[in-house]
Image (tube, protein in one colour):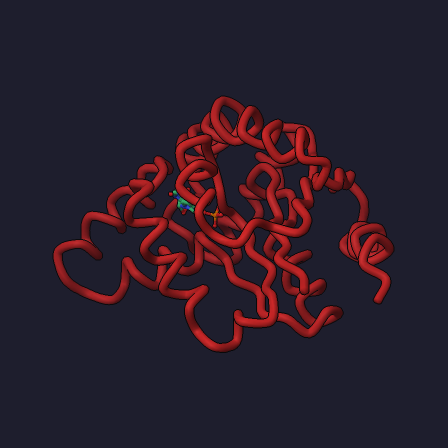
Length: 183
Ligand code: AMP
């Protein structure tokens, strides 16, 4: 059973790689950012709060994130494993997940900050995401470096981290990831 977390700075391709790996392994791809954007467009007071946090590039409060995630993990298709991108993003979320079934592997895709900024600026033109503006991109990268990178060390201590260089083509990165999950 695979419970795979995919992490990496914005623009590293974690969503794209999670989709490819999801097809390869036949388990669903869950994206924390996507789940939260869905929640933000559901309507109501909480949705409005979430939307304004997303627009600022800050992290949505941990309690909300955990609730949204557990609700999704409880659906039947996630019972036999899943690939999750974008969670946990800090030590508090890591600790909040300690009482849940732990990941079997954590894939960390790495790219230099300049590549992140270049890729996200391009995505802004294509996808019209409200959080892909230069200021917000910089804020999201700062949070990744300050909070997510130190948290990843906790998984490293458990020996489940697989580091992948994200600067190659989509296909090259995908085959490097797949190599470590030969069925
Ligand atoms: P992403 O699509 O992964 O870049 O996430 C987009 C935005 O969703 C982030 O900038 C955060 O505002 C929010 N988000 C995604 N994952 C999390 C998380 N684990 N905790 C808190 N906020 C999150």
